[in-house]
Image 1 (tube, rainbow, N blue to C red):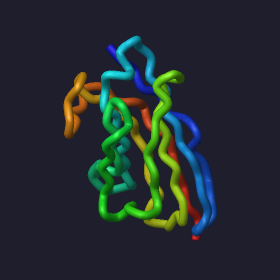
Image 2 (tube, helix red, strand yellow; image 1 turned 60 degrees about the horizontal axis):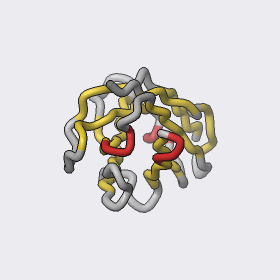
Image 3 (cartoon, rainbow, N blue to C red; image 1 turned 180 degrees about the vertical axis):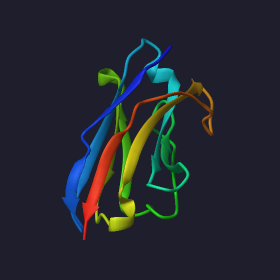
Length: 121
């Protein structure tokens, strides 16, 4: 069992940058693909980015390609989402999710509680 815990959200001006982190407990972290999702007020949760267990493969939503970068540090059981050139439409609660072992594209089974990212225009 893996429990993701997000951190690093906050308020940032449009055009700025922010990095959110997700620490996942459990000894099997290095076997799990990880993903980031977000949910804006009044909207459904949407996929943002995913990374394979070794970090060699990534996926991005079209809306964040070229601006967001997902990465991971298996020694620290942590996955990151670096967000650059932020826009007001990036405002949302960002959720981290862990996938089933050695599964790509990932299927997710555990979710964090989310961290708020607010971009002011």
